[in-house]
Image (cartoon, rainbow, N blue to C red; front, side):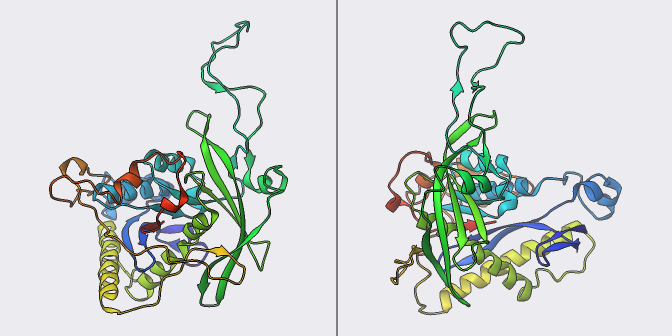
Length: 374
Protein backbone atom coordinates (compact mmCIF):
# COMPACT_ATOMS: atom_id res chain seq x y z
CA UNK A 1 0.00 0.00 0.00
CA UNK A 2 1.09 3.53 -0.74
CA UNK A 3 -0.40 6.80 -1.91
CA UNK A 4 -0.98 6.16 -5.61
CA UNK A 5 -3.67 6.51 -8.25
CA UNK A 6 -6.80 4.57 -7.26
CA UNK A 7 -9.27 3.78 -10.02
CA UNK A 8 -12.11 3.26 -7.53
CA UNK A 9 -12.04 6.92 -6.42
CA UNK A 10 -10.43 8.43 -9.52
CA UNK A 11 -7.55 10.15 -7.71
CA UNK A 12 -4.41 9.48 -5.68
CA UNK A 13 -5.18 7.75 -2.40
CA UNK A 14 -3.63 5.25 0.01
CA UNK A 15 -4.51 1.98 -1.66
CA UNK A 16 -3.38 -1.38 -3.00
CA UNK A 17 -3.15 -1.59 -6.81
CA UNK A 18 -3.52 -4.81 -8.77
CA UNK A 19 -3.55 -5.80 -12.45
CA UNK A 20 -6.31 -8.06 -13.76
CA UNK A 21 -7.15 -10.06 -16.86
CA UNK A 22 -10.82 -10.41 -17.74
CA UNK A 23 -12.70 -12.50 -20.27
CA UNK A 24 -15.95 -11.46 -21.94
CA UNK A 25 -18.31 -12.75 -24.61
CA UNK A 26 -21.85 -11.55 -25.36
CA UNK A 27 -23.32 -14.09 -22.91
CA UNK A 28 -20.50 -14.65 -20.43
CA UNK A 29 -17.87 -12.66 -18.57
CA UNK A 30 -15.52 -13.32 -15.69
CA UNK A 31 -12.22 -12.41 -14.05
CA UNK A 32 -9.36 -14.71 -14.98
CA UNK A 33 -6.26 -13.48 -13.22
CA UNK A 34 -5.12 -10.91 -10.70
CA UNK A 35 -1.71 -9.87 -9.42
CA UNK A 36 -0.46 -7.23 -7.01
CA UNK A 37 1.53 -4.27 -8.26
CA UNK A 38 4.69 -3.58 -6.23
CA UNK A 39 5.51 0.17 -6.15
CA UNK A 40 9.09 0.87 -7.17
CA UNK A 41 10.30 3.52 -4.70
CA UNK A 42 8.54 2.76 -1.42
CA UNK A 43 8.56 -1.05 -1.70
CA UNK A 44 10.89 -2.48 -4.36
CA UNK A 45 13.82 -0.34 -3.19
CA UNK A 46 13.24 -1.25 0.46
CA UNK A 47 13.89 -4.99 0.68
CA UNK A 48 13.77 -4.99 4.49
CA UNK A 49 10.21 -3.71 4.32
CA UNK A 50 9.44 -6.34 1.64
CA UNK A 51 10.71 -9.16 3.86
CA UNK A 52 8.60 -7.90 6.76
CA UNK A 53 5.53 -8.06 4.50
CA UNK A 54 6.39 -11.57 3.34
CA UNK A 55 7.25 -10.54 -0.23
CA UNK A 56 9.53 -13.18 -1.79
CA UNK A 57 12.93 -12.00 -3.03
CA UNK A 58 11.94 -12.94 -6.57
CA UNK A 59 9.02 -10.50 -6.54
CA UNK A 60 10.38 -7.17 -7.78
CA UNK A 61 9.01 -4.04 -9.35
CA UNK A 62 7.50 -4.56 -12.78
CA UNK A 63 5.50 -1.94 -14.69
CA UNK A 64 1.81 -2.71 -14.96
CA UNK A 65 1.98 -3.36 -18.69
CA UNK A 66 4.62 -6.05 -18.12
CA UNK A 67 2.45 -7.73 -15.47
CA UNK A 68 -0.45 -7.63 -17.93
CA UNK A 69 1.70 -9.15 -20.66
CA UNK A 70 2.75 -11.99 -18.33
CA UNK A 71 -0.90 -12.64 -17.48
CA UNK A 72 -1.72 -12.84 -21.17
CA UNK A 73 1.19 -15.23 -21.79
CA UNK A 74 0.14 -17.33 -18.81
CA UNK A 75 -3.40 -17.63 -20.17
CA UNK A 76 -2.12 -18.57 -23.62
CA UNK A 77 0.24 -21.17 -22.11
CA UNK A 78 -2.74 -22.72 -20.35
CA UNK A 79 -4.75 -23.06 -23.56
CA UNK A 80 -6.90 -19.93 -23.49
CA UNK A 81 -7.45 -18.13 -26.81
CA UNK A 82 -8.73 -14.60 -27.42
CA UNK A 83 -10.03 -13.05 -30.60
CA UNK A 84 -9.35 -9.55 -29.25
CA UNK A 85 -7.67 -7.67 -26.44
CA UNK A 86 -8.77 -4.22 -25.36
CA UNK A 87 -7.44 -1.97 -22.59
CA UNK A 88 -7.38 1.62 -21.39
CA UNK A 89 -4.93 4.36 -22.33
CA UNK A 90 -2.50 3.53 -19.50
CA UNK A 91 -1.64 0.28 -21.30
CA UNK A 92 -2.24 1.72 -24.77
CA UNK A 93 0.43 4.36 -24.20
CA UNK A 94 3.09 1.65 -23.68
CA UNK A 95 4.42 1.01 -27.18
CA UNK A 96 6.53 -2.03 -26.08
CA UNK A 97 3.29 -3.63 -24.86
CA UNK A 98 1.65 -3.09 -28.25
CA UNK A 99 4.71 -4.46 -30.04
CA UNK A 100 4.70 -7.58 -27.87
CA UNK A 101 1.03 -8.27 -28.63
CA UNK A 102 1.70 -7.70 -32.32
CA UNK A 103 4.54 -10.21 -32.09
CA UNK A 104 2.11 -12.78 -30.67
CA UNK A 105 -0.24 -12.16 -33.59
CA UNK A 106 -2.92 -10.91 -31.22
CA UNK A 107 -5.63 -8.54 -32.43
CA UNK A 108 -6.15 -5.57 -30.13
CA UNK A 109 -8.00 -2.27 -29.91
CA UNK A 110 -6.10 -0.01 -27.52
CA UNK A 111 -7.29 3.31 -26.18
CA UNK A 112 -4.38 5.76 -26.35
CA UNK A 113 -3.74 9.20 -24.80
CA UNK A 114 -4.05 12.39 -26.82
CA UNK A 115 -0.24 12.75 -27.03
CA UNK A 116 0.27 9.32 -28.60
CA UNK A 117 2.24 9.80 -31.83
CA UNK A 118 2.00 8.15 -35.25
CA UNK A 119 2.83 8.79 -38.90
CA UNK A 120 -0.11 9.56 -41.15
CA UNK A 121 2.09 8.78 -44.16
CA UNK A 122 4.73 6.06 -44.13
CA UNK A 123 8.17 7.77 -43.99
CA UNK A 124 10.90 6.89 -46.45
CA UNK A 125 13.38 4.29 -45.18
CA UNK A 126 16.92 4.09 -46.58
CA UNK A 127 18.37 0.58 -46.78
CA UNK A 128 21.81 1.48 -48.12
CA UNK A 129 24.14 4.43 -48.71
CA UNK A 130 22.91 6.71 -51.54
CA UNK A 131 25.06 6.54 -54.67
CA UNK A 132 27.70 9.28 -54.84
CA UNK A 133 27.38 10.13 -51.15
CA UNK A 134 30.68 11.26 -49.62
CA UNK A 135 31.46 9.31 -46.50
CA UNK A 136 32.22 11.61 -43.59
CA UNK A 137 32.43 10.94 -39.89
CA UNK A 138 31.00 7.87 -38.19
CA UNK A 139 29.64 5.06 -40.33
CA UNK A 140 25.85 5.18 -40.50
CA UNK A 141 23.65 2.21 -39.67
CA UNK A 142 21.07 0.95 -42.12
CA UNK A 143 18.13 0.70 -42.54
CA UNK A 144 17.39 4.20 -41.27
CA UNK A 145 14.90 6.99 -41.84
CA UNK A 146 15.60 9.53 -44.54
CA UNK A 147 16.69 12.84 -43.00
CA UNK A 148 14.00 14.92 -44.70
CA UNK A 149 10.84 13.06 -43.72
CA UNK A 150 7.41 13.85 -42.46
CA UNK A 151 7.39 13.83 -38.64
CA UNK A 152 5.22 11.70 -36.40
CA UNK A 153 2.24 13.63 -35.02
CA UNK A 154 0.16 13.46 -31.85
CA UNK A 155 -3.25 11.89 -32.44
CA UNK A 156 -5.11 15.00 -31.23
CA UNK A 157 -3.31 17.03 -33.91
CA UNK A 158 -4.02 14.36 -36.52
CA UNK A 159 -7.72 14.88 -35.80
CA UNK A 160 -7.39 18.67 -36.06
CA UNK A 161 -4.97 19.15 -38.93
CA UNK A 162 -4.49 15.97 -40.95
CA UNK A 163 -5.36 16.42 -44.62
CA UNK A 164 -6.53 12.82 -44.62
CA UNK A 165 -8.65 12.78 -41.47
CA UNK A 166 -10.21 16.24 -41.46
CA UNK A 167 -12.23 15.73 -44.70
CA UNK A 168 -13.54 12.38 -43.47
CA UNK A 169 -17.14 12.65 -42.30
CA UNK A 170 -18.23 11.64 -38.84
CA UNK A 171 -20.51 8.61 -38.95
CA UNK A 172 -22.93 7.91 -36.13
CA UNK A 173 -23.09 4.48 -34.50
CA UNK A 174 -25.44 2.96 -31.97
CA UNK A 175 -22.89 1.11 -29.85
CA UNK A 176 -25.23 -0.49 -27.31
CA UNK A 177 -28.28 0.05 -25.12
CA UNK A 178 -27.35 1.05 -21.58
CA UNK A 179 -29.35 1.51 -18.39
CA UNK A 180 -29.67 5.23 -19.18
CA UNK A 181 -30.62 4.73 -22.81
CA UNK A 182 -28.79 4.08 -26.07
CA UNK A 183 -25.05 4.76 -26.23
CA UNK A 184 -24.43 6.67 -29.45
CA UNK A 185 -20.97 7.66 -30.67
CA UNK A 186 -19.65 9.25 -33.84
CA UNK A 187 -16.44 7.89 -35.33
CA UNK A 188 -13.99 8.07 -38.21
CA UNK A 189 -10.68 6.35 -38.86
CA UNK A 190 -7.58 6.38 -41.04
CA UNK A 191 -4.56 4.09 -41.35
CA UNK A 192 -1.37 5.25 -39.62
CA UNK A 193 2.10 3.85 -38.91
CA UNK A 194 3.72 3.39 -35.51
CA UNK A 195 7.39 3.20 -34.54
CA UNK A 196 9.14 -0.13 -34.07
CA UNK A 197 11.99 -0.83 -31.63
CA UNK A 198 14.52 0.54 -34.15
CA UNK A 199 12.66 3.79 -34.79
CA UNK A 200 11.38 2.58 -38.17
CA UNK A 201 7.73 2.57 -39.30
CA UNK A 202 5.59 -0.48 -38.69
CA UNK A 203 2.88 -1.85 -40.91
CA UNK A 204 -0.45 0.03 -41.10
CA UNK A 205 -2.54 0.40 -37.95
CA UNK A 206 -6.03 1.81 -37.53
CA UNK A 207 -6.40 5.16 -35.82
CA UNK A 208 -10.03 5.30 -34.71
CA UNK A 209 -11.39 8.54 -33.26
CA UNK A 210 -14.75 8.48 -31.50
CA UNK A 211 -16.70 11.32 -29.95
CA UNK A 212 -19.88 11.27 -27.89
CA UNK A 213 -22.81 12.19 -30.09
CA UNK A 214 -24.31 14.29 -27.27
CA UNK A 215 -21.06 15.83 -26.05
CA UNK A 216 -18.52 16.49 -28.77
CA UNK A 217 -15.90 17.47 -26.19
CA UNK A 218 -15.72 13.83 -25.05
CA UNK A 219 -13.30 12.31 -27.55
CA UNK A 220 -11.52 8.95 -27.40
CA UNK A 221 -8.61 7.74 -29.51
CA UNK A 222 -7.94 4.08 -30.33
CA UNK A 223 -5.14 2.23 -32.12
CA UNK A 224 -5.70 -1.24 -33.58
CA UNK A 225 -3.52 -3.74 -35.44
CA UNK A 226 -6.52 -5.47 -37.01
CA UNK A 227 -6.49 -6.28 -40.76
CA UNK A 228 -6.89 -3.23 -42.96
CA UNK A 229 -10.39 -4.15 -44.16
CA UNK A 230 -11.81 -4.47 -40.65
CA UNK A 231 -15.05 -2.49 -40.34
CA UNK A 232 -15.32 0.49 -38.01
CA UNK A 233 -18.34 -1.20 -36.42
CA UNK A 234 -16.21 -4.10 -35.21
CA UNK A 235 -13.45 -1.84 -33.85
CA UNK A 236 -16.02 0.20 -31.93
CA UNK A 237 -17.71 -2.92 -30.57
CA UNK A 238 -14.40 -4.20 -29.22
CA UNK A 239 -13.30 -0.81 -27.88
CA UNK A 240 -16.49 -0.30 -25.88
CA UNK A 241 -16.55 -3.83 -24.46
CA UNK A 242 -14.44 -2.54 -21.57
CA UNK A 243 -17.62 -1.55 -19.78
CA UNK A 244 -18.11 -5.30 -19.18
CA UNK A 245 -14.84 -5.44 -17.27
CA UNK A 246 -15.93 -2.47 -15.15
CA UNK A 247 -19.06 -4.47 -14.32
CA UNK A 248 -16.86 -7.42 -13.31
CA UNK A 249 -14.92 -5.21 -10.90
CA UNK A 250 -18.14 -3.78 -9.48
CA UNK A 251 -19.61 -7.25 -8.90
CA UNK A 252 -16.37 -8.62 -7.46
CA UNK A 253 -16.09 -5.77 -4.97
CA UNK A 254 -19.74 -5.55 -3.97
CA UNK A 255 -20.75 -9.23 -4.06
CA UNK A 256 -17.50 -11.19 -3.65
CA UNK A 257 -15.59 -8.93 -1.26
CA UNK A 258 -12.56 -8.47 -3.51
CA UNK A 259 -11.72 -5.15 -1.83
CA UNK A 260 -12.63 -6.32 1.69
CA UNK A 261 -9.42 -7.62 3.22
CA UNK A 262 -7.46 -6.71 6.35
CA UNK A 263 -4.15 -8.48 6.04
CA UNK A 264 -0.52 -7.38 6.12
CA UNK A 265 1.21 -10.12 4.16
CA UNK A 266 1.81 -10.20 0.43
CA UNK A 267 0.77 -13.81 -0.08
CA UNK A 268 -2.45 -13.29 1.87
CA UNK A 269 -3.55 -10.49 -0.44
CA UNK A 270 -2.46 -12.43 -3.52
CA UNK A 271 -4.46 -15.47 -2.43
CA UNK A 272 -7.47 -13.26 -1.75
CA UNK A 273 -7.30 -11.89 -5.33
CA UNK A 274 -7.04 -15.37 -6.84
CA UNK A 275 -9.93 -16.67 -4.71
CA UNK A 276 -12.01 -13.69 -5.85
CA UNK A 277 -11.26 -14.59 -9.47
CA UNK A 278 -12.10 -18.24 -8.85
CA UNK A 279 -15.38 -17.31 -7.15
CA UNK A 280 -16.33 -15.11 -10.09
CA UNK A 281 -15.62 -17.90 -12.58
CA UNK A 282 -17.75 -20.33 -10.56
CA UNK A 283 -20.70 -17.94 -10.26
CA UNK A 284 -20.50 -16.93 -13.94
CA UNK A 285 -20.56 -20.58 -15.01
CA UNK A 286 -23.45 -21.28 -12.63
CA UNK A 287 -25.48 -18.32 -13.92
CA UNK A 288 -24.82 -19.28 -17.52
CA UNK A 289 -26.12 -22.79 -16.89
CA UNK A 290 -29.15 -22.01 -14.73
CA UNK A 291 -30.43 -18.58 -15.69
CA UNK A 292 -32.65 -19.98 -18.48
CA UNK A 293 -33.49 -18.37 -21.78
CA UNK A 294 -32.39 -14.77 -22.18
CA UNK A 295 -32.84 -12.20 -24.88
CA UNK A 296 -30.05 -11.88 -27.41
CA UNK A 297 -26.78 -10.20 -26.56
CA UNK A 298 -25.86 -6.70 -27.59
CA UNK A 299 -25.28 -6.63 -31.31
CA UNK A 300 -22.71 -4.93 -33.47
CA UNK A 301 -22.92 -1.15 -33.66
CA UNK A 302 -24.40 0.08 -36.89
CA UNK A 303 -25.16 3.37 -38.58
CA UNK A 304 -27.77 5.13 -36.47
CA UNK A 305 -30.54 5.50 -39.05
CA UNK A 306 -33.62 4.26 -37.22
CA UNK A 307 -32.72 0.65 -37.89
CA UNK A 308 -31.46 -2.23 -35.83
CA UNK A 309 -27.77 -2.24 -35.02
CA UNK A 310 -27.34 -5.69 -36.55
CA UNK A 311 -27.31 -9.28 -35.49
CA UNK A 312 -25.63 -10.73 -32.43
CA UNK A 313 -21.87 -11.04 -32.67
CA UNK A 314 -21.64 -14.68 -31.66
CA UNK A 315 -21.99 -16.94 -28.69
CA UNK A 316 -19.54 -18.21 -26.18
CA UNK A 317 -17.13 -20.92 -27.30
CA UNK A 318 -14.97 -23.05 -25.03
CA UNK A 319 -12.59 -21.07 -22.85
CA UNK A 320 -9.76 -23.55 -23.22
CA UNK A 321 -8.55 -25.34 -26.31
CA UNK A 322 -6.98 -28.78 -26.17
CA UNK A 323 -3.25 -28.32 -26.54
CA UNK A 324 -0.40 -30.75 -26.09
CA UNK A 325 2.75 -31.11 -24.03
CA UNK A 326 4.80 -28.96 -26.43
CA UNK A 327 2.47 -26.01 -25.91
CA UNK A 328 2.89 -25.94 -22.17
CA UNK A 329 5.31 -23.33 -20.94
CA UNK A 330 5.42 -21.64 -17.51
CA UNK A 331 5.12 -17.86 -17.63
CA UNK A 332 6.01 -15.59 -14.71
CA UNK A 333 5.64 -16.72 -11.12
CA UNK A 334 3.80 -19.96 -10.22
CA UNK A 335 2.61 -20.28 -13.80
CA UNK A 336 2.80 -24.01 -14.40
CA UNK A 337 0.39 -24.91 -17.14
CA UNK A 338 -2.62 -27.02 -16.20
CA UNK A 339 -3.36 -28.36 -19.68
CA UNK A 340 -3.12 -32.08 -20.27
CA UNK A 341 -3.69 -34.47 -23.15
CA UNK A 342 -2.29 -35.25 -26.58
CA UNK A 343 -1.48 -32.48 -29.00
CA UNK A 344 -4.41 -31.31 -31.08
CA UNK A 345 -5.02 -28.38 -33.35
CA UNK A 346 -8.02 -26.17 -32.72
CA UNK A 347 -9.36 -24.90 -36.04
CA UNK A 348 -11.45 -22.30 -34.24
CA UNK A 349 -8.66 -20.45 -32.45
CA UNK A 350 -5.13 -21.40 -33.52
CA UNK A 351 -5.31 -19.78 -36.94
CA UNK A 352 -6.61 -16.56 -35.42
CA UNK A 353 -3.75 -16.44 -32.91
CA UNK A 354 -0.87 -17.13 -35.27
CA UNK A 355 -1.76 -15.37 -38.50
CA UNK A 356 -0.18 -12.15 -39.72
CA UNK A 357 -2.59 -9.39 -38.74
CA UNK A 358 -1.52 -7.08 -41.56
CA UNK A 359 -2.43 -9.35 -44.42
CA UNK A 360 -5.58 -8.37 -46.22
CA UNK A 361 -8.55 -10.38 -44.96
CA UNK A 362 -12.27 -10.26 -45.43
CA UNK A 363 -13.92 -8.59 -42.44
CA UNK A 364 -16.83 -11.04 -42.43
CA UNK A 365 -14.38 -13.76 -41.39
CA UNK A 366 -13.60 -11.95 -38.15
CA UNK A 367 -15.27 -13.20 -35.00
CA UNK A 368 -16.09 -11.63 -31.65
CA UNK A 369 -16.61 -14.99 -30.00
CA UNK A 370 -13.94 -14.26 -27.38
CA UNK A 371 -13.14 -10.81 -26.06
CA UNK A 372 -10.80 -9.86 -23.27
CA UNK A 373 -10.13 -6.58 -21.56
CA UNK A 374 -7.54 -5.33 -19.09
